[in-house]
Length: 223
Image (cartoon, rainbow, N blue to C red):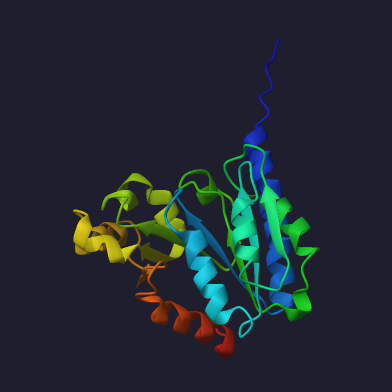
């Protein structure tokens, strides 16, 4: 008897890509720049979003969708820094967000008043690398407490990202971390990465990050 193999994962991924294209078209039509923030747990991306909202939230019309495995703790934190609705997506154990979830979340946002959308993905450097959400670019966040070889251990995420944020630079005097080596490893994986070195806790290095976001919105140039 013949055996028929159904490639379920390929079909699921293909459907996700279709939905992601629809999300991208929707965001572009509304002239909204969308960035997918990806990282391992504890890199500081929620704190980075808090600081960004405090400085640019109203100026740039920033909206946020957060993803977490079991809680909406990150969304609750972020909501304290904005008057806008923060959409929390609880995946119930899934290690990434998908385009269907983003499409649904967009229905609750005031897109007419939004110019910049951050999608805070689930803390994971493996699964989210393979899933398009309709974003213009992925921004990978890693920190000086994680080791210089993070880009080598998770090359797909760094290849798929257009920007990289090295966070927690305030801890450099206290940890054995070589910044040049870390950035070199990242460039070995993706020579086109644009870097920001920040401390979301102290605010060090955030001015170039803010300037980038302002230029992206005010100029209307593609990310």
